[in-house]
Amino acid sequence: MTLPKHIAIIMDGNGRWAQLRHKPRVFGHIKGTRVAKKIITACSRKGIKNLTLYAFSTENWLRPSAEVSFLMNLLRRYLKKETENLVKENIRFSIIGDISRVPSDVKDAITKAMHATSKCTGLNLVFALSYGSRQEITEAVRTIVAKVAAGELAASEIDESTINGALSTYPTPDPDLILRTSGEMRLSNFLMWQAAYSEFFFTSTLWPDFTEADLEQALEDYSGRQRRFGAVLTNDENLHH
Ligand code: FPP
Image 1 (cartoon, rainbow, N blue to C red):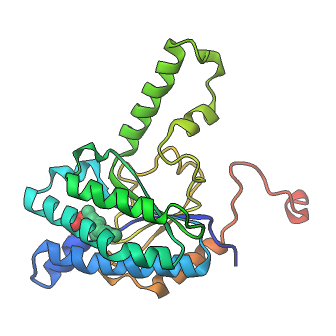
Image 2 (image 1 turned 30 degrees about the horizontal axis):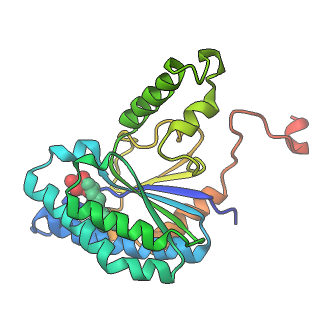
């Protein structure tokens, strides 16, 4: 089975899962965190090299402030509780996104977790937090333009690798597989540049119900796909048709 080198997941449907049970939305986020933990371990044990989880988008700041602070607290508690385990599993933790708006106690927890796991060589686990692809690209443009203005780079020298190198995901390879739960079929400002040749897997399962078996199914599905990156296949069968 061909394993993706990088899986990116949009963990969607926590709110609906809770509402279906007549519980407050945050109940879904608690269960969602437990599922995230399980899927992180599963990816690590399978030998996946990179896993990016969309934990909080730039648009999520528009949610009611009680839900926002609940999510922030959940993240802080998760990091505090899990760091030791991440080290044990040889998982390196980092984040992408604009964390300037993140409360300082959460920032501290992030810094600590990143520091503690910085020498780990197994799974590269990335939380997209206060992340938005348009913002990321805007920031990359600013960085590149500043270099041009300073005379360090000629406009004619700008190519795809210049842009790639200025994105927050660098040097992580582009996601091979993007998975979204809860039946929504859109990218929602997630890794738009990086998704150019990603395979997509959508499931109607809500994130709190997502299991290792669902992950397995996504991996099997991925494994059966032919990726051509816009080119043609070069095997004999293709040459003869
Ligand atoms: C989408 O469900 C989920 C989020 C906005 C947050 C994702 C966060 C977690 C799974 C928990 C935090 C993660 C970790 C690893 C600490 P939704 O609220 O948009 O659901 P809905 O579409 O049904 O309203």
